[in-house]
Image (cartoon, rainbow, N blue to C red; front, side, top):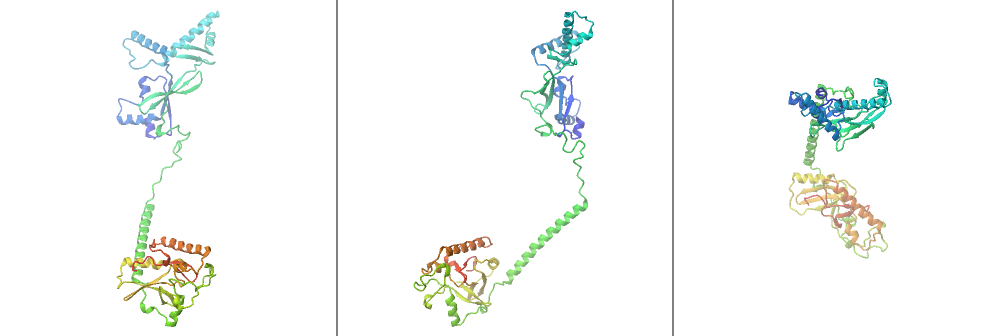
Length: 438
């Protein structure tokens, strides 16, 4: 079993069976231990013996057999004073020899009772076959071939006591295997059941070829590849940082006040007629107007009140929102926030065009929405909003906020009806968010 341990055959994939019909008490309880061997080898043997099961003749447990064993020990001591059993038990073959003599006596008596001859060996032998009788070892059964149907015990190492114990018995006359009460087989390797018929790696290990050493060039390739990947990642982040710094330094959002064009009075009145309204007087619109066909009809300029200034920048009308402060200090957090605003592109978000930071003309420039704010529409009793148009307004606001919350801006903070404006296509857009310079 030491050799089995060295071959790793005690890993739970193998079970060894030992036939030990003449085992003594010490040999059956701790056969793995050798007092004249090293502790290390005894430990290896102890582990290996977990994969070993011993088959031995079953020892009778009746009171008659115990009394018979005691008598054998007493007579042996009386006849051979220098011999002692010590802790050893009477060998099972002593009881079997007793029953063999008893069987011969029974057959001989039957032969004599039938007027047979004591020298007729064949007749006496035939009377021994196919019979059952009660012997000192228990119920003795002889088959038709003259062989005894012996009883056997299966011994297994108990890891708790480090001793071999009977875990099952086989009764030859009944041809029946019976587990011992309160006992179970402890399988090696921590298994909870018997191992498979064939080990995982096969009996010769051919199904689990040894791992080949990884080639040195493979290690070099992996190291170089890892270094290259790290360098590329570092270059990417450095490039992105440099690009961001360049974009911030470029300040392409900055607009010179002189680049904004303001119309002549006649054109200004035209712009005013297109401008956003804080309120609309009653009676200036037809009574049958609805949200499906909204069109603003005003009788005179006094019905209009502009709340935002407009101008032209690069040929497009823009909304100009003045900043109520004497000057602006440009720093990196502000540049980053303005860049976030500049990058927002959505049909339901007012587009940030730029800002003018030339004192005293400090202002923010955004996309111009000529239909005014949502408050203008809601407070005008002359405009009847059907549910189709109401759903459209709500959907536009939800889409705009969903987009805004998915960007780096994250939240609005000042959402209200005056911060929802309507463009020329009656699409609601969200404005006034994100820029701290306001």
